[in-house]
Image (tube, rainbow, N blue to C red; front, top):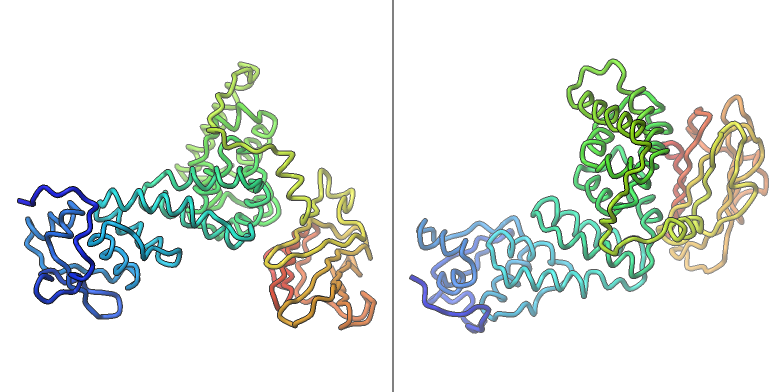
Length: 415
């Protein structure tokens, strides 16, 4: 029976890896071992207490975790503090605290996520998406829901628009994991029109109205469609009609179940006039669509309504391209010689001069697109051409800048 000791407490880190007191061996990722005391570890962890006391095991396999993370975890057990906790090993330490049920360390990890991981230096996309992935994994794999709440609150407090962030996070929707789809739904919360906007674009522009793929079905199965219908009845009808069309003739029971739900909700909406009042469950985390769109339009030009009207935006305009940011366009081929243009600098070249890159359609029939690079090519879109531009009439362009180059993708094809 373990002595009555209140943890966390300081047993002394000098006892770690002691050949005298270390009666339990932790096998690390790189093949080395770390000796720990079963009593000290068991006082902190009921799981380790069961393993060593009831199952009589004297070794634990820790090769799922980074060496530094295991050392931090053990140091915390011995000192009662998490002095060695840093961002690089945070996920592993948090996972060990959860797996071995060290409740006090789990609380420290949650606090560290709030004060350190979410303390973005530059509000860059890489910082934000890293924190997003940590919260997503904690929620999906460990069922720790508080991380998602902290992440969404942080977005709101820093005026990070949901739509602007999800536009990049969900850009390759067909390649997203189920965990990332669930995170997208969590971020949207009461603003589910955002994820449904992306779903409609994906089904129309990428899948070209041909099918309801695995990721589309998964989103429809896990999103609160009733909430979406009550708050956005007109868009719900559009989604219901599209899904009904794509699901026609499907033998999949899962597809039939989603379709039945959509049909029932639409019938209820028609019968009641959609007068139900949606309860606000945003937990004070909402940020307005106007703010989202204002943020989004800084780097994105989108076409609205009818594609046959040609480009709404851009129209021979230039857009500034920031590091690791993307400019996205929806274009058609029915306006020739009107250009997509971005202004940029490449820090990897050691220059701060602003350069220009532009592309324009030269031939509607062959979908031929020429390009111009300031200082590198002649100022003529009819001299050099992009490769492998898809022949689709409607094109989704994504232009991304790194420190050394520009990447141009059209309908998921690098050109």
